Length: 137
Image 1: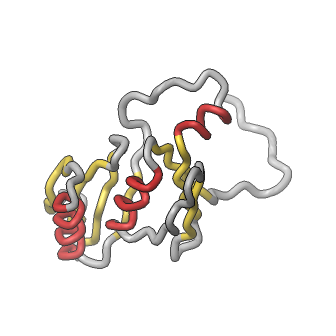
Image 2: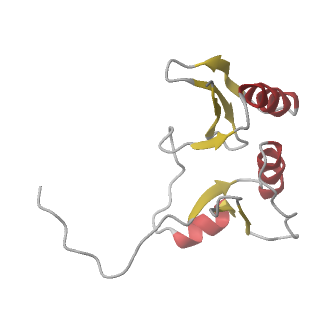
């Protein structure tokens, strides 16, 4: 494999977009795990929030994604997951319980992972896996 040519300018991660079949439902889910999305206005196909560490996360309507993506097809499988750092192992447990109690699917209950984290997996309203974790040490 050849080394790519040097880039002109800097490229940095700035935003993660989540494609949603129901923006208000997705906003409610992601608020449960700490993203302070504003309420979507009627007919709005995009909403975003800036996290405390500077990342922007958007929720985009499927219809918008279809307009922007030539040959759009329904995604299958897990190719990308979002992972949220919690304050403590107890916070992982509490957040997981709150998400499941709100009617969302728990993929894997909190456990102490061999790599030194309290870890859990939940599913967002469109089937994307979302990790919740905190250091055990």
